[in-house]
Amino acid sequence: MGCDIHASIEAKLIEGRDFIMCVARNIKIDRWYELFNVLAGVRGDGNALFEIRGKPNIVSDEVREEFDKWEGDAHTYSWITFRELKKTLPVKYRKEPFYIIMEAYSQKYGFNNVRIVFFFDN
Image (cartoon, rainbow, N blue to C red; front, side, top):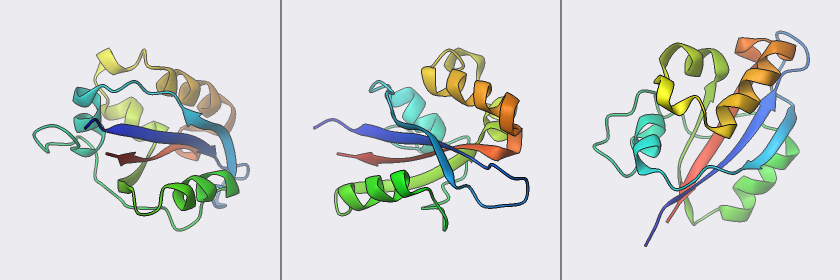
C-alpha cells in the first residue's frame, strides 16, 4: 500500500493575523518518499528536517474541508512556513511545484506569511 501527501498553501492577508486564505488547494506532490521523510519523517528513517506540528489551530475553510474529508484515514498533520523551507529545504527539492508556488506568494505576502499545510494517507 502506498502513501500520499495532501497539501494546500495558505497565506496571511494582514501581518499579525491568522492564516485565513487558501491560495492553492490540493497541491500535486508526487509519491516521493525521500521528500516525505524530509518534510515529516514519513516513509523514511524518521529524521525529518522539520518539526511535526499537528493540525494548525486556525485554517482556511478549504483546508478544514480537507481535514474533515480524510478524518480517520489521515496521519502526520503538519505545516511549514516558506521562511522555514527557504532556510532548510535542500536545493534538489526546490524545483517542486509546491515550493515554486510558495515562493511566488511569499513575494506578495512575506516569507513568514505563507505556509504549506499537509497530512498523509495510506
